[in-house]
Image (tube, rainbow, N blue to C red; front, side, top):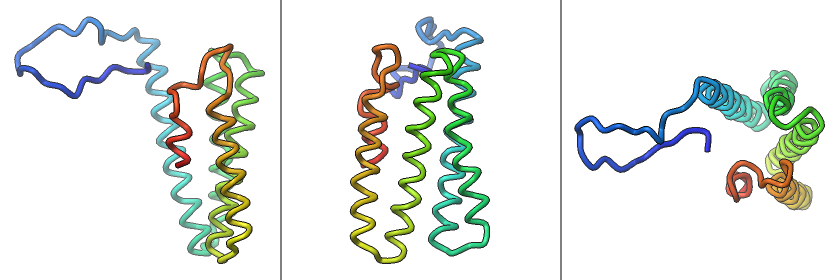
Amino acid sequence: MMCAYSPVYWHYGFRQASHWALTPSAVELNRKFRTLLEQHVYWTRLTVNSIVGDLPDVKETTERLLRNPDDFAAVLALYYGSDIAARFANLFRSHLTIAAELVGALKSGNAQAAADAQMRWYANADAICSFSWQDQSLLVPGGMAAHAA
């Protein structure tokens, strides 16, 4: 778990939360992943808007979005090694590329191409979910599958 959060407030007074104490390196890792996820959301939204709106920046926004897997891999390589990080980046890049195909097919009204892209996108999400981090499951069970649903 990257950070601990308790949505339950039993009292308003001070209470020591020693189990929440994070090391400086854990805080920094959390900050890096939060930044990466914010960038992912931001550039995904811009890319979808550009594709749907036929905006002139579709090429640039798509290229920037496709840089996200490499940014994730750079952080992941510190903990899992460059080979595992590169495999994850390839799966993530495919996920984004297929999603762009899906949006394009839906926009053009091509139901057959959209159904094909959706099937490949879900299969890719399943591959991301079953990705092995040295025999550990990916981050949160069902996390990416929930994202794709």
